[in-house]
Length: 274
Image (cartoon, rainbow, N blue to C red):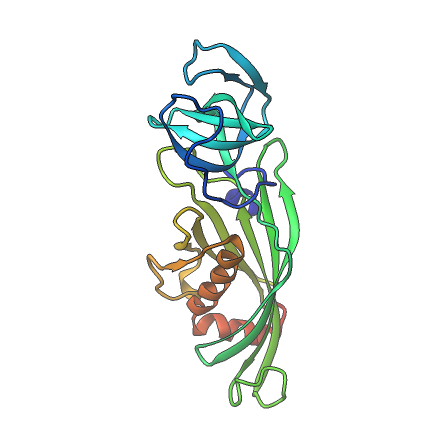
């Protein structure tokens, strides 16, 4: 499941998007649009003095190198890259991909009630996974749920509910866009997975995927993996002004989309969902 999810995702370590200055030192007369972020080289590529292939070489990036980008030419063909806070030169845009940093500086905690079930949960950043043989990597999170069903569901820990259960979900954020397209906003895949384990040993993964658009500051529902355990959420879009907000919204929307069959399975498994 993880391999399929991360097949087109990339390495991390970049700050979130920020507004670029109106004019970067070193752009000169080049007509360019502001683009602020950290980009990674998909292969070895030259840095040139001007945005054209015949221009003088002023630097070199190796595959996997990361650089700050401050602007893109109006034809979206070349990025202006920084060195020491000023523009060093230009790199062909098709050779670069923007990367983000999915780390959380602290856990996210929340409460939510849906479909007769009330849950407290905590989202914890666990680290990153590098895919063997690739530049690609995901940010990984563990989500721990404490849930109650029945009378008094508003009191998860207080003993009033007829049923209680603890279970876990895993969440993965691709730290590079799932496709290369410098003319369109970059989106980053964010997936919430719950593995259901029943008494008979059958395994089912309930997977809900979203696309995070940092520049548009929004999270968009993408797909649900197992219809029998999920509702009919389609085209859901919610504000997400930061990675932290996107991660929180992904869990909230996933929980809201899990149907009564999901919760019946969770409570029947007695907390063995992992």
